Amino acid sequence: MNLDKYLDRIVHVLAEFTPVVISALLVLLIGLWVIKRIAIFSQKTFEKRDLDVSLRTFLRSLISIGLKIILIVTVAGMLGIGTASFVTILGAAGLAVGLALQGSLSNFAGGVLILIFKPYKVGDTIEAQGQTGEVTEIQIFNTIMITTDGRTVILPNGALSNGTIVNITRNGFIRLDIPVSVAIENDLEKVRSLIFHVLDKNDMVLKTPTPIVLIQRIAEGAVHIQVRPYCSYDNSTFVVSQFNEALKEEFKKNSISGAIQTRIIHNV
Image (cartoon, rainbow, N blue to C red; front, side):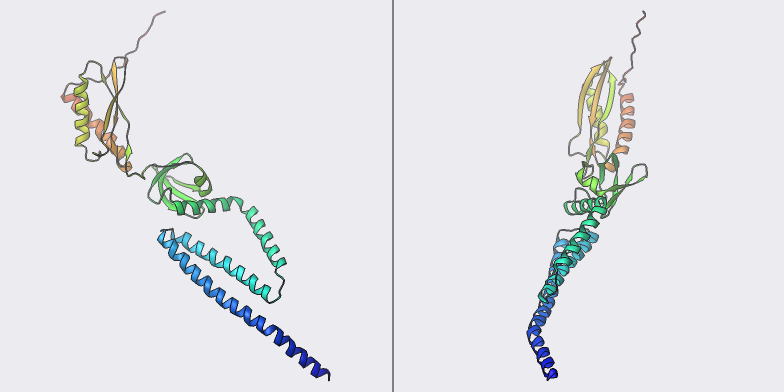
């Protein structure tokens, strides 16, 4: 008699919960398939946006894991398992980890923004956080660059994304400001012509934008001129050196006298 009651109860429980279990399994299987399709779609989207490979992999894993956690909680709820405490514990753990890694998360968020919006890329020369150098690597948490004197500088992405970044090489050229001083008695038109002649002979000086020669000021018996040619950043040092050397020879051949510093001494 008791055995019949137990068998009836087992049959009743199976009849009651079998549809629920089957429904939960179907939701789990369909959910896993949908999550896989979403991960593939997101990967293709990241590739179209030309995101960094490391960022692509991380974001795809983050999306997949987050959706799977939601799916597991949903399936557990369908099976009658209490999920409120589980969600609470998960939220508290996330908050604790977030507080503990506040600085690192800021750098991570900055790295994601830099890799998505690309204010600079590997190979660019930038000025940021008081440092100037060529970017050699953009990591999730840091940006690594080499300065002109060969030092390796590691900058946190959080500070970079929230600060001012000067991308020196983004336009493909920079403008130089080269000061030239000549004696006031020289023919300024001739001086200007010689300067343009020297610039025109230098292959590293760009023809577009056009170089500019300005009379900056006349003072202390001299004419102070500002020469503004354009060139690539990598050639800037060579352009200045070659320009000064060639201009000196041209001034010498054409009898252009340089500025002589005069000092007035008052006897008291």
